[in-house]
Image (cartoon, rainbow, N blue to C red; front, side, top):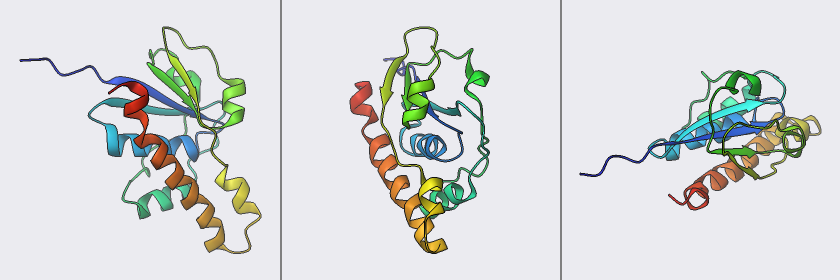
Length: 147
């Protein structure tokens, strides 16, 4: 009988760990918890974004218990893969010990887009679009990881 494969530690990193990286962690837990151990953090701490929580809940994923974390809180973990989900995080990404593979996929910043929205519904549409783009990206991770 073959032992189960070790779960890979994956970190999703964005600017404030309030929206995009939280969504990515939520989707990874939802779809890939049997293969990866997902984490999220930011190069800053902005607090969990209520609109991100709301649109993830609409899709059946509860991230309401997540909290915004600074990447330094996870410095002792050895990640197999670090994914930056915005350009600012990629540019400011710290070095990680071990052999972490780095991957970048830039997603629009929903709070920034929502600031220019004419209505609450239009603002939420930005969050939903980015939520769905992140979901599709997370679904490709088994191919990236070779699992």
